[in-house]
Each structure stands twice: as C-alpha cells, then as structure tokens.
Amino acid sequence: MKTITVLLTKYSDWISWIVYHIGAGEYTHASLALEGEEYFYSFNYRGFCVETLEKHKRRGVEHCLAYELQIPEQSYNKIKNRIEDVLSNREQYSYTRFGLVLAVLRIPFRWNYHYFCSQFVAELLKEFGGVPLKKNVNTYLPNHFYQELKDCCYLKNIRCNTI
Image (cartoon, rainbow, N blue to C red; front, side, top):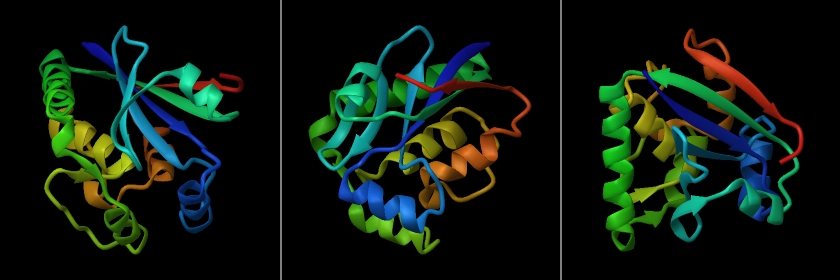
C-alpha cells in the first residue's frame, strides 16, 4: 500500500470567494501529493501547478485539511504516471472557469486538457486511484471531498491548524 494526500485549503481570491459562497463550505481549493513528496499537484487560474505548504502560507492560507489515503501500489503508480504525464506536457493544459461554473450548477462537462482543481483531484482518485467517489468527477468541488472522504474506510484525517 502507498499513501497519497488530498489537501483542502481556502484561498482569498475572487474565484475562491465564489466557490466558498456557492459551494456551501469552507474549502475552495484541492490538491494532491504523492507519498514522501512535499509537492502538491493541482490546477489554478494559471494552469497546472505544483504547490508547497510554504506557497500556501505566502498566499495567506490559514486553514486547511489534509486527508491521507492508503491505496494499492498499482493505483498509486497510475496516479504518479498521470501526474508525470501532465507535468511533462503542462503547456497543453489549461484551467477552466467554464467547467467550474458547470460543476457549481451540477452539470458534468469535460473539455480535453482543461481542468479546475477539484476536478483534477477527483479524476486522479476515481479513475486512476480506485477510490470509490460517489459523484461524476467533473462536478466535484473542494468541499465534496471534505464531505465524502471523512467517512472513507482507508482514510486518516489530519487537521492543519497552522501551515
């Protein structure tokens, strides 16, 4: 078994403000880290991004929640390969505000090479990691992970009061 970490945070930018008020919850960004790495992978308004806890701290994030999930090594390798593929071809990928709006409206929509943060994390978990998420990956908002992962049988909940 290998470990992956899903990090939920709340940013203070205007997109986060919208997600916070429409998404009915305190978390507005989702990212994922591989076992033993300090880097979190996700999408933001600039496209595919590699984040660190220090970057979150500089951006003013004061509250986060991290979930550690144990997954089979085969699933872990699929997630790792997918991240490496996106990282090596990152110029092809973009952030999608349109997809985010549709997710808020609960309309599943997939546009090749375009992601918003929680859509990317949901795809990694469900399609590559074998995590049995309940919803369509294209409609996940960060708070959906909070609601769903807390009841997951192979979950370790870690609270980040201060990054």
